[in-house]
Structures are given as C-alpha cells and as structure tokens.
Image (cartoon, rainbow, N blue to C red; front, side, top):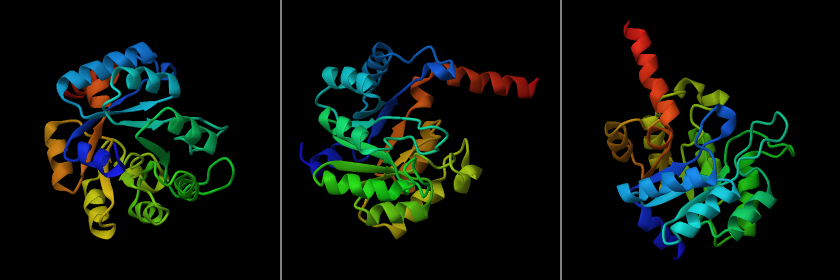
Length: 236
C-alpha cells in the first residue's frame, strides 16, 4: 500500500500492541505468544499491530501480511533512556522486514551517541523518505520538533515516561492530543498509552486522535489482574 493508503486504513480505528517481556515476569513474551495475541486482536477487529523485535514482528507479519505493522526494536544501551529503535541498524532491519510504519523515540533526550532522539529520527526519515516514520513523543515541544524533522506520524507513547511528563504516569494526557492537533496541523496523530476503557478511547478520538494503539489493557493478563488486585486492596 502507498503511504496515504496505509494511513487511511488505520484512521479512526484501533491498533493493538502485541508485546511482552520475560524480564517483567510476564509469562507471555515469545513469538508464539505474540502471534496468539495478534490472532485474538484480529478476530476482535483490530486494523493493525505494533510489535517489538524482529522475531515477534516476523511471526505476526507472516500471518497477517495485509495489515499494517508498526515495528519497533527496543534496545537498551547501558543506562541510556532512549531505547525505542535507537540506532540506524535497528531502523534498517525494521524496514527490511516490511514494516509499514517504523516507530522511533522522538523525545528531547540524548541517545547513547549523544544525539537528541528527535534529531536521529530526522536522519532516519532522510535515509528512508518513502517509509512512514512514527515519532514516540511525550510533550508538545517534542511533537513540534519531530514534525519539523519529517515525522509522518506523531504518537503520545512516551507521555508519562519522561521527566517532563511524569505527572501523567498511569493516565492518558488528553490535553496533549488537543494541543498537538492545534499546533501541528496536518500530521497524523496516534494516541498510545494509558487507554484503559472504551470511555478513554472515545475521549481520545474526541480530543483529536486519528487512531489509537492499545496494549496492556488488551494483551497483558498479568497487568490487568494486578490492577484489579490493587483496587481490592484499597477497598478492604
């Protein structure tokens, strides 16, 4: 599909993030598990997927080649905070796997090479001008910076996970969606993170999101259970 066709295929719809890591204690983390998540999401009507690492991406792409894939590769380099597709070899690999969309950290933080993440995103877009590049941002400033670097899609993925946005840990920043829609018109906007209910999803769309990525609330039984257990402990 052409870039515009990909964007139109996900506009106003739900993308499911199929991720899981063993280091968090999550029993669901293998490519086989990710494929089962994707199959469930597909049967539920998801229009596409977000997945991490080449093996997981390949498993889902092979099963659902007709659906857009947002590919990422989380690579932790020492104690550096920038880990979502942080260098060009990771971008090269995701492009070679046929990911319709490649997502990178787009925050105002420096990567392991001393370069601001949003600057590196610009380099990736210059190398792959016909590849849809998505910026995972946390603030309006970062949205504006990434848009100037050529990002095709802005996503609120990192809101709540950076020092500047830590007040939104655990909750969706709907105002950020409104601000981006006003200040960065014309860029495709995705809401990702802290969407826990259909009411949250509705508010995200009403706040300006062109599409929504949902992960934990759909695909992480361990975290879903923990939320209810925590609630039960508070009301005792």
